[in-house]
Amino acid sequence: MARLIEKIARIYDALPLRSITVPEWENEKIYYKPVTGEQYDLANNLLSPDATGPRRNAQLVVSGALDANGARVFADDEIDVLMSKGFIGTTSKIATAISSVVPPEVAAKN
Image (cartoon, rainbow, N blue to C red):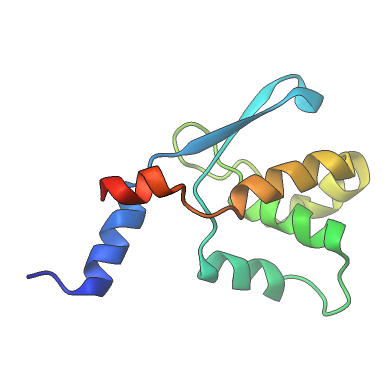
């Protein structure tokens, strides 16, 4: 019988990519998986302790936005451009999607 931790890892690895269409970016489709604790910690560690909510959202987008193949679409050093040129509401909307929990219907299938 598989250990619980192995089951948890298998369930996460099997999750399909989810997507959000971003009208403000000419209907670009951003793919993502729900953020893990490791990704969340990494995003927070890249920020200064006094970072604002908008910068935290932008960091979640930079670290969690994927293309249709699961590859990151932003490099870590692109956060400043996203902060200065991206709409605050847009990054907030994407960050909210990325940081959302797994829907119960997906969890129930596993």
